[in-house]
Image (cartoon, rainbow, N blue to C red):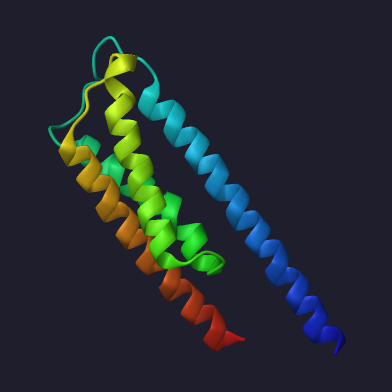
Length: 126
């Protein structure tokens, strides 16, 4: 009984940490994607799409890992967040690109898949 209670507390703490991590990633993404630039930094053509992909996978992973929120709300919320960022970027001297939003959405899908895979592995180990 005591072991089950302790495991339940650890699981609750993980959920809290995952939600906190998601909030930190969201804040960093917002600042990074809305920071005004005089000119884009030098980088290989299309590398910004990879950055969008990785960033949004990192955004979706913790929430998919906990299973606290449904996958569809996380998919819609994170994808809408990426779209909203793209829509308001021109007011911060940044360009809005549909391809960035597509990379964001694919990143969310992969983050969800990785989070689900992680959760399944953890459940089989318990």
